Length: 42
Image 1 (cartoon, rainbow, N blue to C red):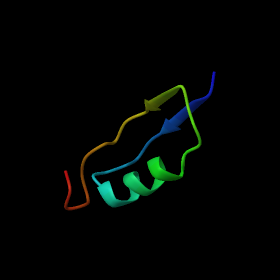
Image 2: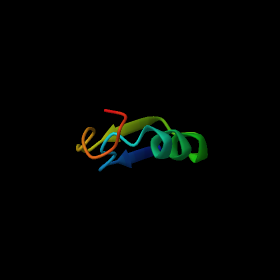
Image 3: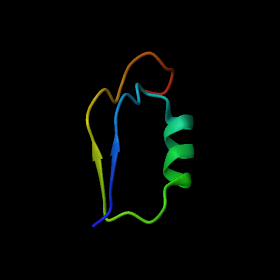
Image 4: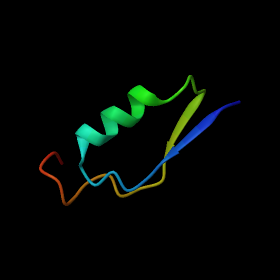
């Protein structure tokens, strides 16, 4: 099972989309927190 761990996104949707597009095929994505704040895309 392949798992991707993401954290400290802080509302940066542009960077999140780039990371998700660059991920190889994964079975699960686990977000470890800090989804909102700092950037204009809450």
